Length: 95
Image (cartoon, rainbow, N blue to C red):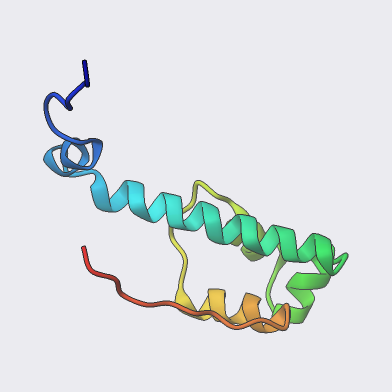
């Protein structure tokens, strides 16, 4: 006997609780922080070295790499990408 979904989806629950945007932002930040950390490993860059390339402080870089801190400016993201020899590719997608 096939099971059918009962009730609403998890996304619907998050919408009802007015948490969907916040949860989505945290998830995106975690992916971005992970990608930057992985590229740092590939390039064998320390936090100090990347911060220097970005012309910022190590504390600012720590905030960028903090997966739970969803406050991220596009300027900071673009600076990190450029310092790593990468570019940022963002797009809006249908809901």
